[in-house]
Length: 197
Image (cartoon, rainbow, N blue to C red):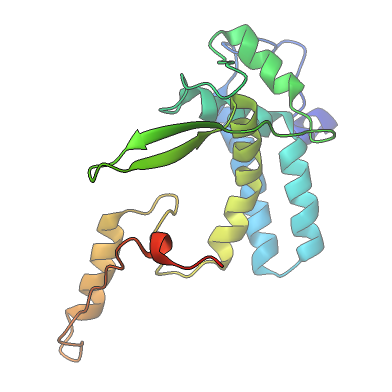
C-alpha cells in the first residue's frame, strides 16, 4: 500500500467533486473505523489514539464528512457566516481547507421554533465548516462509542431504531418467567424544573 492510499491523500487525477469514487472513500473510512473498534476491544488505547488521528487527518475522511453535511436535510441552512456549499468547486475547496491546527468554531446562529404549548424552543445552527468538523470527529468517535456502549441502548444510536427496542422488549417480556408489569415514567419538563443553582 502506498503512502497516498494509506492516508487517503488526493491523487492527481481526482480533483473534482463529481469524479470522486464514493465506494473507495467509504471503504477506506470504514476499514479504519473497524481497526479503531478492534483496538478498543483489545484495549490498546495508544493504537486507538493513533488510528483516530490518522482517520481525522485523512483526505478520504474529510471528503466523507463534507459529503455527509452537504447531502443531509439541513444542507441549505447557513450559520452565522451565511455560507452554503452548493457547487462542486466549493465542496472541493472546503475539503482542502479543513485543518485542525488553528481551528476555531464560530458562534451558533440562534433561532426560536414555536412549540405547541405557545412557548419557543431555542435552536443553535452551526456553520457548515463547524458541522463538517463535527462529522469528521464523529467518524473517529463512533466506533469507540459503539464498542463501549450498552448492548441494549437504542436512543440516538446509528443503525438502531424503535423497532429494535420493541423487538428487545418482546424478547425479554415474552417468556413465562418474565415480569408481568411494565412501568413507564414521563418526567414532564424535567430540565425546565430543575433548580440550576
